[in-house]
Amino acid sequence: MTPQTPVRIERDSLGEFRVPAAAYYGVQTARAVRNFPISGVRPHGACVWAAAAVKRAAAEANMALGVLDKRTGGAIARAAAEVMDGRLADQFVVDVFNSGAGTAFHMNVNEVLANRAIELLGGERGDYTRVHPNDHVNMAQSSNDVMPTVTRLAALSLVERLLPELASLEKALRAKAREFDSVVKAGRTHLQDAVPMRLGQEFSGYAGAVRSGRGRIQHAALALREIGLGATAVGTGINAHPDFRVKVVERLKALTGWELRPADDIFETHQSFAAFAELSSALKVLALELIRIANDLRLLSSGPNTGLYEINLPAVMPGSSIMPGKVNPSLPEMMDMVCFQVVGNDLAVSMAVQAGQMEINVMTPVVGYNLFQSLDILRNGVHVFTERCVRGITANAERCQANAERTLALATALNPYIGYEKAAEVAKEALATGRSLKEIVLEKKLLSRAKADRVLDVRALAGPSIRRKRASRRKAVGGIS
Picture 1 (cartoon, rainbow, N blue to C red):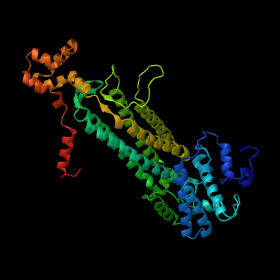
Picture 2: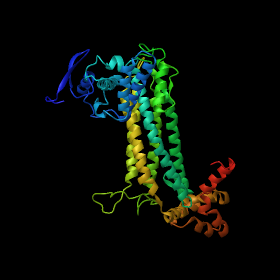
Picture 3: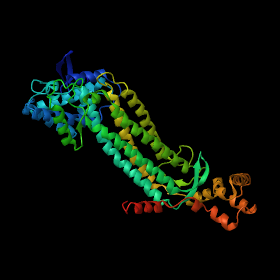
Picture 4: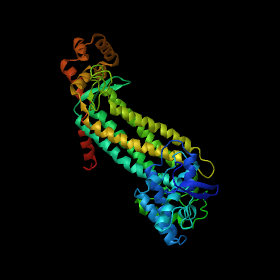
């Protein structure tokens, strides 16, 4: 607000304060803007939408219970519906790092809805005799039950956007598993030669990890459907109609289409943020798996002349400002960075969750900020990773086959025929001389040529086709895939 900005004077319990005349927000928001110039980051759109949904549901519940007149309540509900549709987005101006329990953002919402409702009733902004932010918009509510509910609803909406991207990534990895099913390569344990396997098996494992991560997130999100609205200040429901708890959740359920339910133990929901920790933890575990997968892709594509070079990643941009022709694994590197941030965000959420004291946890803003960022960047990162990297991966089949035939761990297949000790001697000699295991076995007459060909057949050692295994599973369950 500049000295030339037209203002109106509003009053709260601390006295008078200047508010931009054109603003839909009011005095408490204006104070918060001055008090919290912290990050420059404004509330997440999902958080604004969720807050408006809560306010609309509360107004409709209070009207149905006969404690809020229909003219006032109807105007509040209309104003909230407009905000849910994306209007007045520029009026939510409080920094994400604001007052404990998110009271500053909560009052920002109350004031914007009050002033828009006043307009709808033909009044002027700031005339709270018509619609009051606290008495009407905030009827039967407190920051202490509203803000955890807002965070739950916003997180649920963002989880809904993330899950399809994870399903797409899993599907893309499954497609690569089928595509690479015939490609035999050397397995690696401890980053050392291991027995042969199929490249498709490796990608099948990646797909399974993504599927499991998606399941953990879905399970964690179930706890967010338990709603503590109606607890008001400390869980006792002071100033709320006895039936408000049930009625407001019914309205929220209708507005969102989600299977929401009133909290079984309103005091637990009021005091504990464990549900947020569980979701954040599930996001962290997914991030750890994605880091592992991205780093495997970096290793498998390393080279081309001095690394493994068993797969090709799509070339999306030049890799060096000084080395001509260099192409880096840019998209797996991006995925790593996204996931590192998610892991860090989980620590912030964990610290905030354990910081609850007595009847409430005042750290709602930082919980929400970190959860929402994790959900956003995972959704965007996974989408780009899937579409611009995974779908375009190709196999260097000849390189994979050569590595499979050179791995010293092929000696493992000799154990049942010549014993561990002799097999180890053969492996040592192969390493020292650069000759193949088969060549040494035949020279020492440890196996016949026919048996050596069969025992050291890398394709057979790589195990059955994943297609055959999946077909067998379908047959075992009556053909249901």
